[in-house]
Image (cartoon, rainbow, N blue to C red):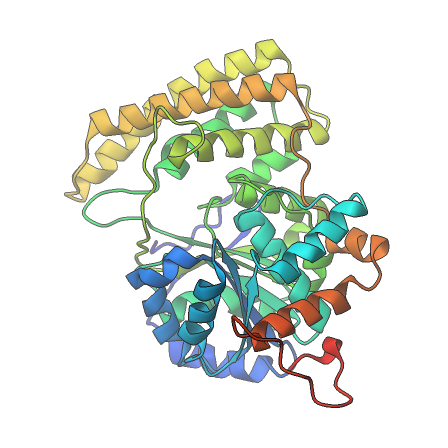
Length: 422
């Protein structure tokens, strides 16, 4: 996005001038001595069989400023966990895989449930939360970066630009969100273009100026899966356990971080990853489920900020959203035309109809249960309830790291504690 406009209340760091990846990496290596960086990669085992993750791993082999890489692995059997260890063993950094389906991590989750700690449902949210806990437990990294494992267009610049605003102590940021243009021969990013942005602006029409809405609407790509933050935010931020992860994280950052410490950064000229199906008739899958979860997260965060969401307001919201979304379709059709991009108005309108259905489903569920599924507890509360949880977590991850199917964990070196890791 070649401009230098500062929109909204969140600082925008643009891509200006010539590519400068070499300079950024030199500076990141220098700053990493003071602010070590951990990279968290939430991944399904299925991603290991797809080309995107292979490209990411090949790229990370040449990144020297990372202190550690933590892969939070879901939906993996014992054999698949062993194969995952082999897959990631080519990386030169310190790498640990958190086997979320393994017996040791499951025992820790059961322990937390017995202490009435909310751990959410299995999925990306819980996987990220567990990985943050492991990084916190080791106390070896001060910056935590996260991105998805399905980025087909990944390169070194993505990560460098994401980490730089947090790792450089001279800038003073505590949270950084990535953004990019989702464009190939056509416009992508339907959920952002046709759903979340029209929804946020419709809400502002109905309830007037509201800090959270203004904040969210200031992000150019609020649903981007890439962000970096200081370690302290991982202590105090709660995390949603569903598709509302990105909106929930931003809402927590809004509560816990000063605006001047928050930024968004343009990380790529082009960004391509796998595309979710609309799943128009399946509210438990695809973009329809994403829409429902995002809407519920938005409703609950607004309600927690004191915004009264009556049934009549939420009914009016749907009508206001539909008008805003239709206007957005016209704008993007014109944008596509001047750039000679393909544009299917029927496909765009179909997406809006699915999103409208999702808003109705989310409204019904919110009115039935305004609290819904609790957010995952922050690590500050977890450590208060189970003081030795970090030692347990490190021990579980290290034993899984040393374990081979059919055998017992290798014995540790004498005098080496679980907390120290390896």
